[in-house]
Image (cartoon, rainbow, N blue to C red):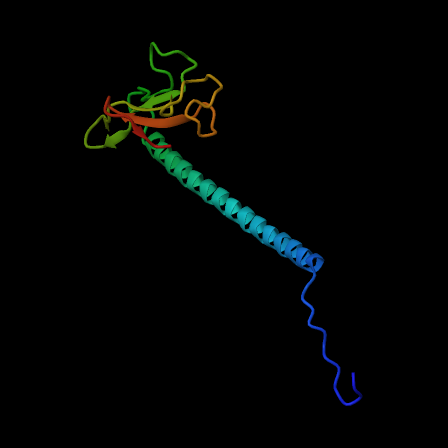
Length: 156
């Protein structure tokens, strides 16, 4: 090399070790970000499911409270709430009542029987301790409301 020529920089690329270390750092950062996003998404889904369940239960309880508030004993002392109708086992998860529907005359007008009871959810067998429909919940029950022998309505 002559004294008048500037030194040339070496044209050297990255070594295999440097590439491997950079790739490992990138993969580690990517996995950390991915895991954080996954945890956040799972937490959000859990909160939304809980909120939906709370809304359904509040609605069901409000319906029951409305019906019970309008039931009771009439002027002659006849009780219009029967927690276990005659012939029904005492272990039944059911309440039957009649609602006061009008005060047009004496005595008040009462509705037909309104029944709230728990029934196994669709594709579930009652009290077998198993997840029959494969959704992760064991022995799911539905809260049903039936008015005057009509079609049962799922309220929760």
